[in-house]
Each structure stands twice: as structure tokens, then as C-alpha cells.
Image (cartoon, rainbow, N blue to C red; front, side):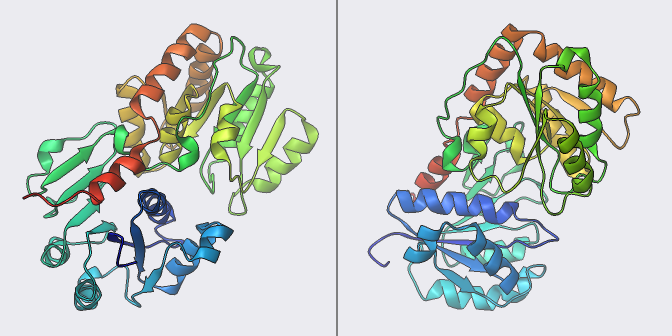
Length: 352
């Protein structure tokens, strides 16, 4: 390990903060390893350790590709782990520490920066981060906000998507035959079932198969299963490992705001987005404003939500030229190589 550049990744994941931080850091770690670096994870508790291990492939586990240091700290109170982190970081020559946590403070980051170069994954702009590198892959970023950072990576080009989303083949056909629907892990508003009912009753979508992502935490899973048994055009997908391949088989998509929008862009699937939580609104609106993915609104506040969603989906379904244009714009904005760019920067020599 000592012969390769050492990069530490400090993050966590659980039922409260979800698994997004772990997943994007694992994606970056894989890119680092591909560039002959030695990534090591620093995790606060056993829950985070178990979740990260569940995300690794059998080969990665067998090879112990990503060592984990279990800090035994509280992920919600990073300042209390400063002394622990100081001991860990002082024991090796670390090229970079990548931090991905909503709970960090200025004091915490400043303390880490005294020991090694520090990068921070940001999508909140909670304060001006005193680090060497800030990564914010939102579609529209106020880079002037970051005055204390040495370098700022901003925009979709730095989205750390899994390798399968890099250079995924895609073709825009004249007719829409398959619709991809992603409504999050729980879908408390039953958006997938309600939209499916609308589309099944429509003559405009009578030949379209509806591919719905679901899972054990989906609030209306039983209803969707019953619907799929009654209607062969409803296809449910659970525990999907080759998401890019599934997306590439679809002609159109309807998705909640979040990482899925970036994945759809990388593949090039024309899509319509929506929001059902406050933190999804800025991102969904930014994709809309950038001319990449039109936003159908927020299910919680828009009384005509499904009418608007239907209109936007139909506008794309009936216009293959528009779908081709959108697909090209999406792939130009996000090419799936963001993790490679981040890894290369983390391995770059420090400024003279």
C-alpha cells in the first residue's frame, strides 16, 4: 500500500442519511484504484461498515480492495472525532482526504487541512469550506461562493457515476415503446402506481411498456405487484445491478430529482423529472433551466401534477426529433467520466 498514493475517504451511510454518500465515494474509490492508488475508507460506525461492504463486489471483498478503518465515532458530531482523525492521518503519508458528510464544520475541516490536503463533496453550500478542493456537481453552481477553496470542480462533468454509465451505447428510435419510471426507494405518494394508471388508460401510450423500479421499502409495492399481474405492460425491477443497461433499453423516462437524473443524462435517455421532497427541487429545476430535463413540478404542491407530467411525457413521445436533441444535450452535459476526473485531481502533485 505504501508504494501507491494513499487516499482516505471519510463518509458514512445509514437509514437516516441514506446511502448516496457511500455510493459516490465507492465510485471514486474504484476510479482511484484503477489509477493505481490505494483508497481507504474511514467510517464512523458498524452500520456504515456493513452498508459499504454490501455495495462491494465479491471480487472486491475477496481482494480486500478497499480497506476500512472503523473509527467508532458519532457521524452526527464530527468535531468529537478530530483527535481520532489526527492519530489516523498522522500514522501514514496521505495524498488526500476526501470528506463527504453533511455534518462537517469549519473547525473540523481546518483541523484536517493541517494534516494533509483535503477535498470536500458539497451540494449544500452550507458555509465557505476551508479545503484544497471542493467538488459540487450540481448543474448550476455559484462558484463565487467558494472563496476559501484552492480549487473548485463544479458542474455535471464531475458527477461520480458508476463505470457502467461511461460511454453506454444508446439509440433514439422514432417510436416510444418502453418507459422507465423511478420514484425513489419508498414512493410515499404512490406516484408510480398513479402514473401507470393514467398511462394505461391512455390511447397515446397503449403500446408502451412501463418499467418501474421498486424495492422492499416501497410503500406501495404490493399494489404495484398486483397491477403487474393484471397488466403485462407493467414490468417491475428490483435489486438492479446493471442500471445503465436497463435505462438504455428505454425510450423515455420519468424520474424523481437526484442521482438518477445524472445517470439518465449519461446514458442519454430523454426524460421528465419531478420532485417530492424539498432537497430535490433545486436540482430538478436546474436540469430544467439547463434545457436538459423538463420538470413536471412537485407532487406535494401541484394539484395538476399528473396532468402536467402526462403532457410533458406526451410532448416527448410524439416528437422523435425533440427526443434526439434532448439526448444529445444530456450526454454532452454528463459523460459519465466524473469519477475519473476527481481521482486524477486527488492524485495530482501539490502545487509548488
